[in-house]
Length: 266
Image (cartoon, rainbow, N blue to C red; front, side, top):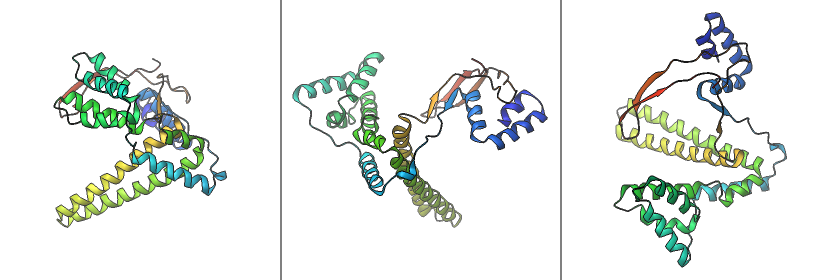
């Protein structure tokens, strides 16, 4: 908020923005996110955690374990097997529309498609391999999994269990990274690398739980797109930002350039 106001007025407005950020906290941050990025953070859920029973927490824990463990492959029928094989073959089509349609369609088969998709990850065609891996991931973490639906029925218990586990994983990750830094300073490079890898694994698991939390509590991701609107809550309207070229590196290390213009009220 302070940054936004500082861009529009002088130092006095910057101080005013800083005060707003301190006083209004997350609401000021949410306003800044809307103005800068065009996204509207979802409000924190109001959950009755006081009425959660131990039985509900135990059930939530079992469902979380099951979800994290992934989907178990099921045997498709003869006709289904042929349909899945045809869709996987379409992953290598020269037409983007066909490839995309096949990727979406095969996910609908769920666990029945896993065995054939796993085999497709060994394909010589890079496109087929990539799409097969993506389909497996979507099937394993999809919002339509039975564990997600059952966790939504005990949402408050799910909130407690997932949050507790996620925080513990982040704590272990921070500890591992801290130990890795200490080992590097002692010139124990191999041990440091091992400890850093351990920390990265903790963070990866925590991220997976964050994904599950969003599916259960919000129904999708934690942030939903929304129109960019002028910031007028504190009497200040954000000035349009100039068009500029952002240069950076995308996936694979290739240098990319992107033109963008951010303008309030559009």
